[in-house]
Image 1 (tube, rainbow, N blue to C red):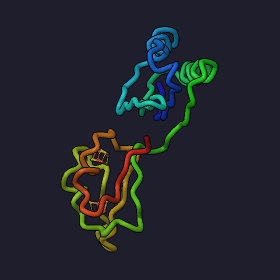
Image 2 (spheres, rainbow, N blue to C red; image 1 turned 90 degrees about the vertical axis):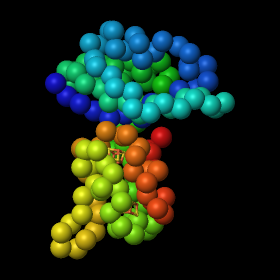
Image 3 (tube, rainbow, N blue to C red; image 1 turned 60 degrees about the horizontal axis):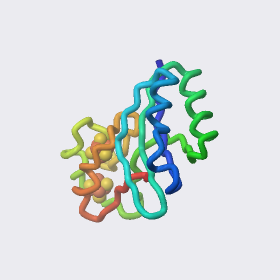
Length: 134
Ligand code: SF4
Ligand code: SF4
């Protein structure tokens, strides 16, 4: 089993199509939709796909053939290093320890492999240094 993170972008004419439903059904995948936004210019989703690696590959091919823009992500959020003051607020609030402080340098780092895209740190960060990749 493999797990991969993706950002999917849909044009307005695709937003109401059952594309993700077909993907789950036809490629035997578990899909976790972590964020979804729809507006006048289309829709975007942050998802995690879990399944056999060849099935994930086929599902991505299916999405692209359906005109969905697919971007594989290494992380769900980005931390602006110029804005971050290393105050540690995100560490205390993150439910899965995806933010950590180096005990020597006191610098705060983001651990994307642990992040579940809950968004709690985004609201909690005093200088607004964290944002979703959506
Ligand atoms: S809460 Fe914001 S400013 Fe504070 S350490 Fe986290 S990312 Fe940096
Ligand atoms: S989005 Fe949630 S899980 Fe990810 S780093 Fe922020 S608080 Fe932690």
